[in-house]
Length: 424
View 1: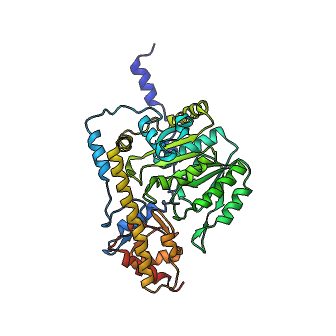
View 2: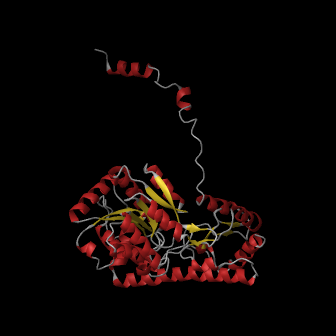
View 3: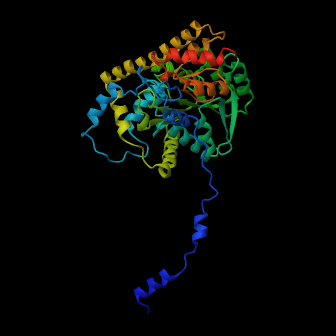
């Protein structure tokens, strides 16, 4: 019998299955991925040495000095977390307390659906992760379904359902001429979609347009969904941040619940608590009964298991502490209103500055829209001029992040917009 040394010597003397040439060519046909249109704006901004540069592409809140903000309620909650809790795994479904408080925000604290345990809900990796979990759930258990996505929408929505291999269709939403909602076309698309279709809806502060249906329009949409037996999936990334009132911002969801719909909902605490990097969110699905909810939740957890196994704990603890403590929750409600009011104030200031400059265009849409983003109506060529001539950075679709507008730069921004649009 050969010695162990001889055996290993023989193995080492064998030629590798893949030669150096074949291994080096393994990835040679992979091309660089295209830059993300949103993240690319920040990269270009950071590389610009101009002292006058302005970034109105970033999708994160800034104060009036253009600085990131950490809410005081978050700081207080962090101090309670530090040193007092272990770092053990959360269950696959996440923090039970955080999920409970999150459902109270979306469905209402006295919701019968919560009392009846009809909601399957799991902690997710912010809103993006919640959408992706649902997209994978849709593909696995409703393989013949497709998703209707508004035009336009947050660009990552298309990536999420594409990578989950769910076929996509689109429906009309934004009206370029009025810079408002194309309600008639939207309703036609809802009526003409096959019965039982899935629709992605923005609960409030539509991204990127800032255009939301009125309460009356939401009721009409809900009614037509009921007629067609469509399933609404709400992405609610801005509850509280849009108007300053979480109850008002949940109105669309409450209307659909009142009308007897089963719904899906993705929630995030990135914007309304400033927990961008903590990736705290929740996916919920309203089911027919408790038995169904138990089954759906178990399947959502099974989808999460090979994806990331367990969600992170730190941000979930912060959220659950804030929402379960009356004093901290009141502090949060005041702070989120301050953020929303600053955005609303900057909308008014930008509009007023453009009007004072004698712009021949109507800028009513700036204050008619709501939330972090303003869909300005500028063309890609006009946006390119803003960047080249004025060092102002935004996505080429003309979407302005109002969080990047301050009392210090609103005049400069208005003048630049006036210069590139006055001959339009």
